Image (cartoon, rainbow, N blue to C red; front, side, top):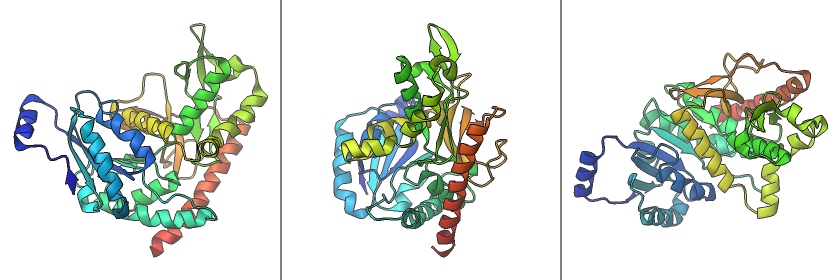
Length: 352
């Protein structure tokens, strides 16, 4: 284990001067490019607040430990006052111990010629192990955010493997898709993303996801207007807008030759900060959560992206939104894909 190695004197001064107990935050895949964009924001107070000290735990596989050492050195060199300690490790018993928050970024990426089934099989193993480690070592109140793809099914696998941690504590990232949808609407209308609210990503973080703006509002000349009314371009909203958001990740890879990192890290920060501090009054965000008991006809026991509001670190699905036939069809399609993924993953899970 490599640690920042603060002196005992430093620790004593820290505890005396600061009323706030440090929280333990784990980032897996910590030597990767998403983590590289993410760790500074966590360390500088942008996510958990400017007065919340943090013990940051970085986990990666053994062959990446050299790279992780470099990341550790850079975090030390940032001289961030909130970082009480940074621990870099390849050991699960160290990484998952007493966690308050686990951000599971690391997963097996899809390689050329790989079927989605092969991808699921490799990731079931990883997330079964990480779920078991959460069960064994983390606090039962831990908030778990799964980023590594296929994120929804990986999240469900981790949750199933940690039965004593409430299912509601597990969520997966669809905030990047949510932000992409907001940005596309803002670009089309010539406003900032901040002027657009309540877009929804339904379903899977895959190309079947359904970006829905039927309930979204945009601020124009100081007035809130429905997006359909503001744009007056239904064919774009039902066509190109949806495919642009669905395929944005692939477009970034094509252009950059690497997958989204800066935007993914920003979305993780948004997602975790909202869990920590709640959502603004009158606004909802998209998040993959357990579907049990939802009112939208999505089968139970799937990890499905819904519109949620968050208060006191607890999310609630936004109920009662009218769903038209166009939306219904798209929501069912992505639910069907998730049910198939779950079935495949669970075959592997029982034999893993």
